[in-house]
Structure formats: structure tokens, C-alpha cells
Image 1 (spheres, rainbow, N blue to C red):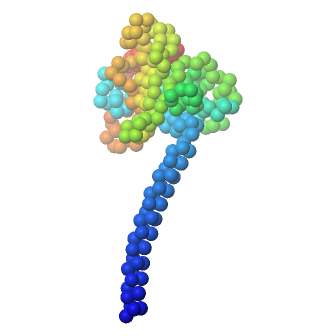
Image 2: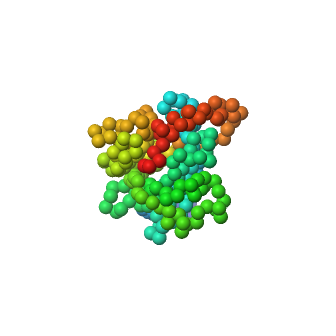
Length: 274
């Protein structure tokens, strides 16, 4: 009897001990998960943010959907971006061009983007600067060419011309659609194209691969110059190249537009000297 009672007591004690051990293990798992998450968050470096922006900007994107929904304010434009070289300080240089959809071989805007972390004393994550290109003809369709037929890295560095704009991007808060969002500093940058005296740029990079860009030119009185940068309706929304279905093949957006439409686009949207 005594041994039976002891045995029963032993089983009961073991069950309670198992519950305690299980609770302790669960607590350890939770604490361990929290510590791991904190470590992962701390491991995101300033250069990780810069690389994330480079990856998000790279590729072929179109404003096709906007052009279909609001043809009075938006054209179907192609945006193409790809890595061009890397500077000695680690900054990544991207080649960027925009063209009318029907004539991708004739880009109307060509730039270099230089991507690097924001200075430590600034409240932002990534600094995205645009630069003019010394000989734009040499770089047309840079991203579409085989690498051995492109200007080489040392040539790219030599062809980086005057600084145009800088956008300071910050990581978006949790729950937002965007990954990074930012703009040029207050007052923008000097620009004298077609009656403007200065320009501003806003950019947001989204989780689904979209890149929204809104460039605007202003006169001395702060009025947006209507003849310069296309629409006042909002930013251009460039979305990753879609796979065309049967109906898309016969969309009016996929046929050649009249030359006058292209000229209108070039005069109202592009800023060759920005």
C-alpha cells in the first residue's frame, strides 16, 4: 500500500513537473524568438537599406495602367533601370532611362542614379542622387545590351556629369504599402528648363515592386510650370512589366501612337536638361 501510494504520488508529481517544464520551455521559446527578432532588426545595416533600394529600382516598369485609366494626364511610359558600376566608397551607380512605350529604343530621359546610405547625422535611410550623363547617345538602351557591349565601369565613372537632384528616402512605417518614401529637400534644386527656376521630386517604392515618381518644375513665385513636367494630377506609377494576355495584345495602348502625341509627351513631360 505504501509503495502504491508512493507510486501514485510519484506519477502525480511527475505530471505537475511536466506542466512546469512545458511552461518553462514555452517561455524560453518566446523569449528566444523576441531576442532573435531584435538581433535580426539590429542586423539591418545602412548599406542593407541602400541595397534594397537598388534592387527595387532595377528592372523594367511601365505606367500602362495609369495611361489606360487616365489618358488625358498620363502616357504609357517605360522606365528601365539597371546596375552600371560601384564607386570606391561602395555607392551603387544605376543607369536609368524613360521612353515612350512604342519606341523604347529612343529614350527621352537618361540619368545616372547614385545610391548610398544617408549621412549619419540625417534622419533618413537612403540617399538617391541623379546625375546627367556626358554622352547620352553612348548609353541608349544600356540595360538591354549584353554587358560586353555596354560602356565599361571605368567609362561609366568618367561619364558621370553634373549633379541634378537628391532624394532622401526613409523606410516606411509598418502597415504601409510602401517600403521607402522620400523627396528632395525644401526648395528643391535649380532648374531653368522651359521657364522653371527650380524643381522638386518625390518618390515612393512599394512592396509590390511599384515605383512612384513625381517631378515638378516651379517658377520664381512657386507656381508649377504647366508646360514642363507633364501632369499635376499626381505621380507617375511605374509597375513591373506585366505578362500580356490575349486581350492586352489588342489594347490601343500597344499600337503606335500618332507622332503628334509623342511630340506632345516630349514637350510636356520630359526634362532633357533637368
